[in-house]
Length: 214
Length: 214
Image (cartoon, rainbow over all chains, first blue to last red; front, side):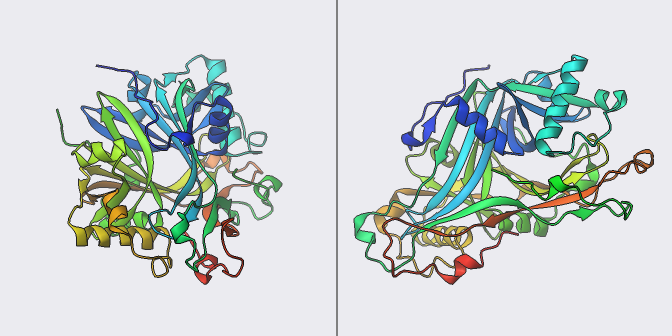
């Protein structure tokens, strides 16, 4: 029996919101999400690539994928996007924590089947996951499109949680002569590694040097 | 009705394993996981910090947390740890993918209540999440310990998936004069940001400069 997801904020109330612009910003800064679903009360959590298309979140995968079939069949899912922003180093273990931005999206991820919409959705994924790349790649073939399932989950039923700022130590801990603050964390790209079958003449494109994750 | 989790490898069979040492290595390189659970067939996926203690994965949170209460009560969970290692840039969108290491752990996260074991478990978490920090922090008070729930999930029922290596383009795409290869991604620490209430004399400790994520 499907019920409405429980989205009440209980603890750390001040961190929670349903700010749509903020939810979009978090999704747009992420390359992967964690997709949760239930089968006979057994939870499964699977990492997947994602991109946002307006007020929807796009997921894609092989038509042979069990997960994609379940989701396309209307199984309720929870798509969680988390960006770990830093370690909050307080004067005690108890008050130490992490800074993060997180969106939990609830609903049904519905298949996008109309040919034009599907091509457009997959291009949005490519543009988001590999910025600059779309213009260089050949168009997908009909066979490739047919082998891919594209799903769209409405960004409609969601919660946002953000934790940021410095540690908040109680006055009694402030006298300790121990460093306290935030160590920012960020996903960074390293040196591009050419494929073994790449012709030596093909240089790494400019867009690889400027890749950032916000 | 609780059933056994379905852990068969279906697609991309070559990537899957149940290699214990590899599972440990992935957990040890991670700072956060995504915890999934079901309530009336509604999935929830929540990010949490984690650390490994031998053949168990430690989670902690406030005793007031709804999630911690549910988990401590024996609700089946799926703890997924994902490390995004790189973008695999093939000559087509279809063959492009991501390199990653992922462990999905199934089971029940049971409360660690015995005082000595709980203190030790929380110290393992501190040492893992903030290497070098444990030696400097004051011991936790009894009140802090009582306000914290510590859970241990056996690293017993799990699957490992690893995707690595260069793109694998079909021969017909190799003639395209487009760069192909892997863009490695890694979590990196930035410049430590001192807390506003930190005395100017306290310099950032050495261990912050050497923080690495593997």
